[in-house]
Amino acid sequence: MFSKHARKVLVLLALVAVVAAACGDDDDDTTAESAAGGSTTTAAATADTGAATETTAEITPVTGDCIGTPGCIPDGQPDVNGDGTVKIGVLSPGDTHDNGYYQSFVDTAQQFSDENGWDLIVVDQINPSDALEQARNMCRQGVDMVAVAAGELADAIPASEEDVCAGTVWYVAGGAGVEQTPYFVQTNDDVFESLYVIGYASGLVMQQNGLTKAGFVTGPELDFATNAYNAWTAGIQAVIPDAETVVTYTGDFDDSAVGVEGAQAQLDQGVQFMYPYLGGATDAVADLAHAAGVQSVTPRTDRCDNSEDYDVSGIFSPGAFFAGILEDFNAGTVELGITRTFHIGVDPVPTVKVCDSVTGAAAIQTQVDDIASQVGAGTIDTHAAAAAVAGG
Image 1 (cartoon, rainbow, N blue to C red):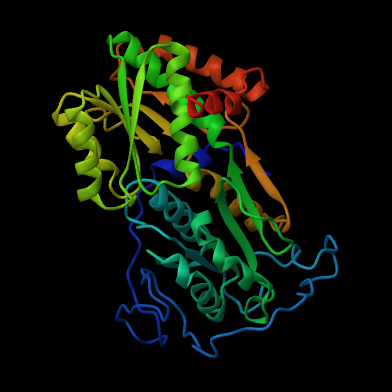
Image 2 (cartoon, rainbow, N blue to C red):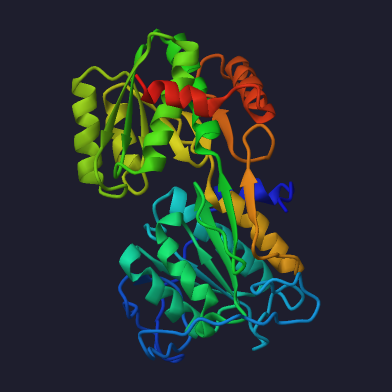
């Protein structure tokens, strides 16, 4: 499913501005908040607010040439509903102008939409409690695809089985994965694999500079964040066995104030290298670290061009995964009901890049690539390594 065209990588670099417009009547040019909360940032067709509940349906495939599961809709793509336009609807829990994780998702959708003359509708900063109604509202706007940008909005997924969303292709950027049903396709990656290799690269940079203490600043104390921290620590300690790491859970991926507060507390404890595993707060934390002479790792995107703040780019952007799904959608080959898992050292993404600002970057990159290959081949058990860290 995952194409290796160069465009997959290029989408990570695109910073395409999303044009703000109305959510309401077709001739209304004012921006409006959507019915269940969240920020609508692109033009949207008229939405019937309708009833608050929907009925569950066994969705009949759009064509007869299908895989035989209730949600499978190949063959008519990309204008699935046959209304003469192609609309992609994105639902995001985070800020899609964060210069990172969530923006990469929308930038990818915008690039494909611009290239193919599609319409794009984006609703971001959605509270998970509002996810289901936001999904129904998106379907009412006649979209051909609903793209859920992160697993935090898993509560939106039941709408894929409702009459209001019948005949709509659904894609979920599952991250650590959500329960698969026949009504959507999802992509995910293995956080243990990716973060172990990112940790290994961090350890090599730290070793070169004689550093032994690293800090991990993240948001809520969720399982995937804890797993990421443990795997990252395991990777560092594979290089520097006596390295010390500390973690701060700020409670919010996007709140720069609490991110900076947490990072400052770590700097006060003598942290010498930092991983801001955040969303919208990432740059504020990295800027603080840089001001203190501490280098950082990027979360999810290639930011090596911003070498003043970053030494290592951990690249597992949802935009890169989304690109593969959109290419399949454009070709009419999306299959619902499946999970596509991407593995470091096997697929083009996830990957880890050592920035040119690091002395001896090429030699370190060779070592990182070798470890990634070993992880991809299964010769390093990253889950066990992270479990050993968690067990103390």
